[in-house]
Image (cartoon, rainbow, N blue to C red):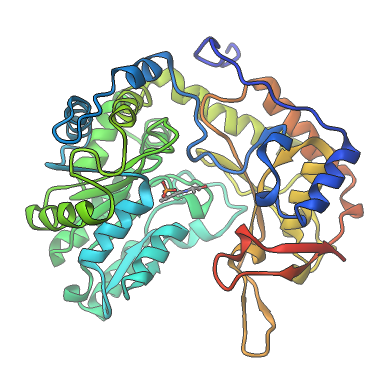
Length: 456
Ligand code: F0G
């Protein structure tokens, strides 16, 4: 087989700024050892997130000029609506400025005290919006999905028996909606199988509970189904994506991922009553229902992006580039969440730096070392992001200490990825030198964004 190449030519480039190791040491110190506080200009390869960081195509940029900025009834809205209806089959399409705005509106209507919202694994903003409404967010991913070293095809699947038990225990009247996140970001970008989607729907249907997809990375999920699930290898990615949506009653979407744009999202659903309330709320918080917090040009770019993302050559290259990085790290014994997910590699920090106790944030130590060694920005997903304190102020750590290397879409080439692998390998070879960190300042919620550290 020949090398899988980037399925595009580059027409417009953005220079990246090189710095020396001693400059980066100074920059990192000035940023209090928190990558969120480093100016992006001082980053060489930015793997902080795959959200809103995609490169748009020539046709998307053309769409930016085509955008109709009419306040009401914009031509661009009707294109946006047509593309999403055709893809998802959902009757109502409600634009929002990004994914979390769609979540906020949906849970403001369906959530509230005494309600429960199950998901395979809630993403932080989804959980936060569920909890903000007064409801409880519950994760019901299979046991396999909680084992980082296990190689299995669909580690994003929901535990069907646990779901049934949960509904019976809490009462169907207290569960207004159940979610499946495709792919499961918080669980390592792992896909959900079509069979699991079908089985979840069957259970929910018997109780009269609607199924929603958190569809941010639906195209990457469709690709994994095509490659890994029996009966799908000959189906087109469009057919597979349409089937995924056909089992659901609605979705929330951050178009900043598989919409291939820098900003935007939507809520789409079949229920007339919820849609009516959602549009009313939208007018208060986002904007008129034919733009919902977005410019007409954004709606054009999203419509175009959704038409491009299911291209077989694009997804083959996309998933391969993540897997390729995973293979290079695994080859020298670097522990990562297996198998590589659709949008990111997750390094197991406890395995990488076993000499640093969780109280000294091994993941953050690796994040800092990757920046100093190669100007690479990544993010800790462990005790910094999810750690809580008990009544005596002792740290309660989450199960895993991870470092996420998220790959922006269509932005970096194979040599960029080779460079990233070399830097991670170099840091790994010198891992005994890694030092832990202490927090010197932190916010009461979502502290990882602003916390300040010093080295131990
Ligand atoms: N759901 C999932 C699964 C996500 O990964 C995100 C965002 C959202 C919802 C919220 O969308 O940012 O448009 O409001 N994830 C980004 C990340 C931030 O880095 O993983 P948003």
